Image 1 (tube, rainbow, N blue to C red):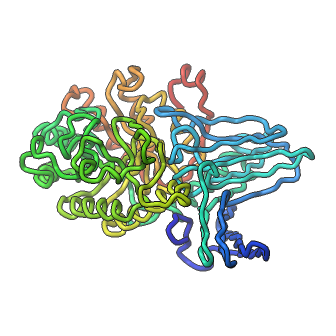
Image 2 (image 1 turned 30 degrees about the vertical axis):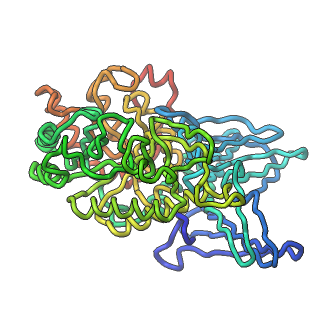
Length: 539
């Protein structure tokens, strides 16, 4: 689908698509419903296209991707909820008369709800029972609802959230909805999950990294935060190399005059105070230790304390005459604007082409407020949230196509935009900012309901843990982190000799098993519950 992420095939015989065309003679509106079936998977893909074939302007107020009716309501609903640092906890409840619904109005798919909903027969568990799963390939505002009407029938609807949404269709114009994916399983939640996993791993994720084993990395964020220089970065990289780590990632603080989170977003120029010889020199020093070099960016944001904001204060999302709400001391760039996209493309492509970068962590650390655009007329302001997503997808397509050798990982304050839309461009996501091993059990378990292990970033961090201050053993933290794309997020130069030996063993083991872990079929043997975690520690 032009401008939107979607499932794909590598051979024409893998799938067939049925198009149902409906026409309303009064309004002149044509709606084309697309149904795609796959030879290998028990799955459908659904979307809709609205086309104005009349002679008057039409205003779409609701444009969902899929609607499915069931003859009864004897179901449980299962969805994934949470907040920052506790994303995608599994929730299950009985359906009753009325609407059971989830969604996001935050401009992104969010920490709080994931664009996924499942209906299960009451006896369904991990291994048996019927399950109908619904997942939306989209990264913005969404809804997913199951409505039981007065006669006991159920309707599931999914798509762009109609809250603060409308789309103006002039004669001859069309609107395409995102794609919804529906999976059926007779083998319980596990069967549904494995279908989603293989489908998303092989027919949603793209590029040369799709089938490759992911590198073991060390990230300096929790080791240094903003306080680093070339020497201590090189020291961490060297310590990692001696243990068998393969990639070093330089996190926030390398650009502008960014000594804290209150400045410089948008000024994507290296900070010569911290890096007197520049970013390219640091990357080569890291490479000389035997590690690849990776970099953190947050392109969608702008700091009021930045040269970019002083030059282009109208480039952020805002409503004229109203206060611009800060979150994490930053505003959101208006990604619906072509000039914003061109600026970001120019700056990012310059960095990625001049520095030997193998990996990029693409962050997005706040929700959207005042979702207005200085370039849109009044009658089109409610299009801004969706146009933002179209602009983001356009930029991601340009960047990832130009730099296919770079492994991109998406992030949004952790797992605040862990959705199929982002996986189309970036084959893995930072699962959560909470790196505590025990907290990660529930987070990674819930994430695995829909998303394959190869998409989940999972790191060992220091103790006491920086988020919850819990102390757990290095061995336990390693066991949990090996359930995803394995890495470290701490100062490796501070390891004792015993910790170095343990880390070497962890890295050697993961290199042996990562092909199976990242690309194999996942069977969840136990359900993660709080009491079980306290008693057993891990699964």
